Structures are given as structure tokens and as C-alpha cells.
Image (cartoon, rainbow, N blue to C red; front, top):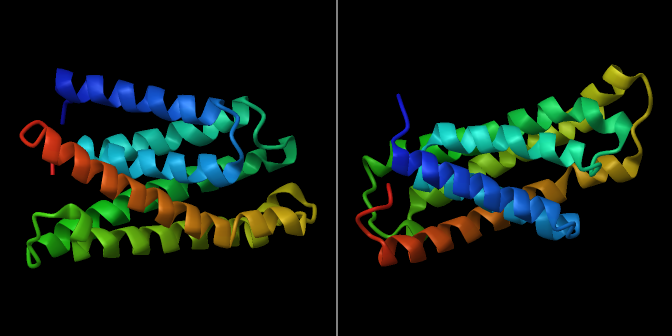
Length: 183
């Protein structure tokens, strides 16, 4: 599948906006939901593949900017996988259930919210278990409890809050630019 010029332009814009959010240097409780918002918004506006692509870029940029301490660089693949799972599960569940439960208002759509909650929960599970079990095996050291705590409940809440923001913003955008946005 090739991206149209419109989709490519949108993807470049959404990547740039996400990178701006990351580079502002805001605290993680602000940056995390904004990045998750952009993952879901990119998925809604363009495609699942575009959302997965953005989810690949964001942890790499965080590492380059020094937002991840050196010993946590092995966490990057797990962050990429968790971002991909968030986007894929959100998109898959939303589309699968939408065939039975048609709702034109995405903000009130049960399939969209279920997809968001399942995707966020799986993202949380991957990050938590990666930090708790896999990372200590990879680096042959104990991981600080503060880092493990950062990879637990805050990740779940960040994904849910960011996804909720994305649904709200997409609803506003689609009511304004109805025919040009993909559902």
C-alpha cells in the first residue's frame, strides 16, 4: 500500500508535531500523554501503519535527547513494541467491533474505547514486565525500583489519557473537516 501525497504530508506534519512535544522538555507526566495522543491520532487520521511508524520514532528520539539514561537504552525495543501494540490493538478492536456496533460518534464509540483500554493495558503489561523481568537479565544489574514504578501504572494512565485526548481531538477535527479525514 502506498501513501498518497495527502497522507504523506499529514504523516510528516504529525511526526513533526510529536517531535516538538518531545523536544519541549516537559515533564514525563505531560510528554507521555501527548506522545500517546499523537500515536492514536496518527492512527485515526492516516493508518495503523503510520501510527506504528510514529511509535518507532518516538523512543529513538527520546534516547537521542538523553531522556533515557544509558543503562536503560536496552528498553527501547520494548517501548517500540508496546507503542506498536497500543496502536494495532486500538485499531483492530475498533474496526472489528465497529462492523457490529456502528456508531458515527467516535468519542462515544464503545469499540474505540474498548480498543483504547485494551491497547493501553497491553502496553502497560509489556513495559512493566520488560522493566521488572527482561531488562535486569539484559543488563545483568538490578533496575532501580523508581524506574520500574515509572514503567507501571503511569504508563497505563498515560496511554489512556493520551488516547482519550486523541479521540476528543479527532472528533473535533472530523466535525470540522468531515470529508477529508479517514474514519
